[in-house]
Length: 196
Image (tube, rainbow, N blue to C red; front, side, top):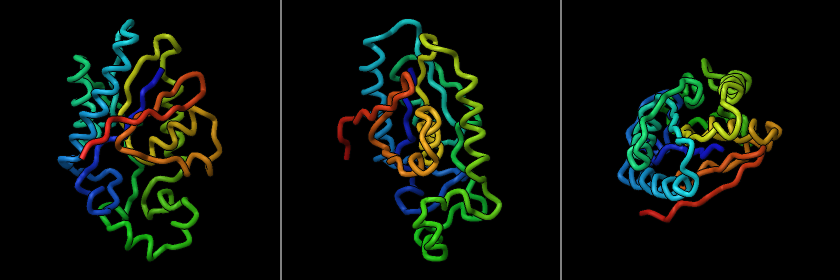
């Protein structure tokens, strides 16, 4: 079983900037969201404590910080995997999303925009990373992990796990106040307690 989380809100999320591989710190709301995810995951994993749960995260700071809050709550260490990083949005990194959307309205209307950034990653690049990561996971019941990743990457992880089409995967929501349980080819959303 996998509990998949997106990192908490960052300063770039708050200001509407594209992050990609750029670093941005969690906001106070982002820290509260990470704590709410930690609370929910702690409750869920206590019901099924053995063998031990692992926490694995993207090495980007926003995911690392979220993962550490969760791992501290669970009393475990965090491992990092580059394959869980957010999509590289190349030349669009750090730009306001609204400006990029205004310059490329057709791309944003199609939902394919993250894969069209100059010098960024394509859908095939990111799906290759995600699929490689999924193929390296242990088989159940040893697959007991909490994973902290990102918006676009999280969509593709869920899409690949549930064998969704590209179009369906790109339409998935990317909350920062919920987690997803991935088990037996199914994906289930679990909402955290609301935070302000």
